[in-house]
Amino acid sequence: MRHQIPNALTLANLFCGCCAAVLWLDEQPYRAAAFTVASFVLDYADGWVARALDVHSPLGRELDSLADGVSFGVVPGLMLYRLLMEAMCSDDPQLWCWAAAPAFVLSAFAAYRLGRFNLDSTMRSHFVGLSTPACTLLVLGIALAAHDNTFSIGNFFRRNPWATYALTALLSYLMVSRIPMHGFKLSSAGSAARRIIAGFVVVAGLLLCLLGPLGASVVVVLYIAYSLLDPPA
Image 1: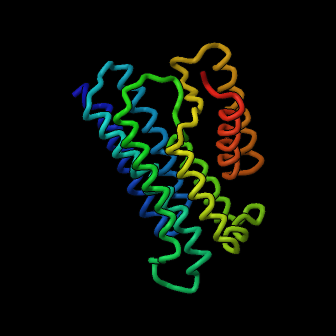
Image 2: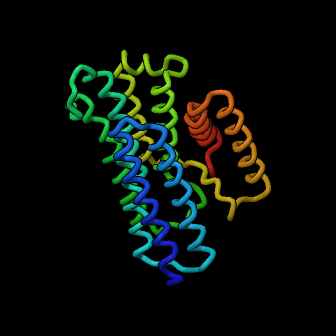
């Protein structure tokens, strides 16, 4: 049973991802966001518990990527799909919209990244390319801000669907790129790295207070910029 605890957390991540997907389709973004946040917590918890219990298995690694493929692949694709649907097919009562389908290119690239990760046995303290959770967090902030029309972001994306297409293409590229991104893993971070992590946490808190959900997207943009300007060794 001890070996199955991390797997149970991983499957709970998958469960939350499925719930989030349905809620995005049902136009309940904040309930969907709550399940997505739960997926983030569970995704971190399964790895932490596996290390704490010293239980690792090929099955756990595969399950982790399968769960992430839904929670951080399908779900952000659905967020972008809703943005495009509102811009391109707002007069059509049907849920399906051909013009919005390119949003799932992001889901396909997320799956490619996760599959490549499973085959990579190199031990690193950093990521290669943008992680799927970070990508999801960026899209989540924009999707919620568009729903609330914060700073007229909703109007912008409804009037400029090309911006959503461009965002989909950019994030898809970043996920499968070979650009080194900071891992920010507390277990292997030195004192300097811990100070940087603490700084990001403080900035994230301030941005969330000032900008609401959009602050999450800004934090991820700052993280990408920091990784580009000061690449991990």
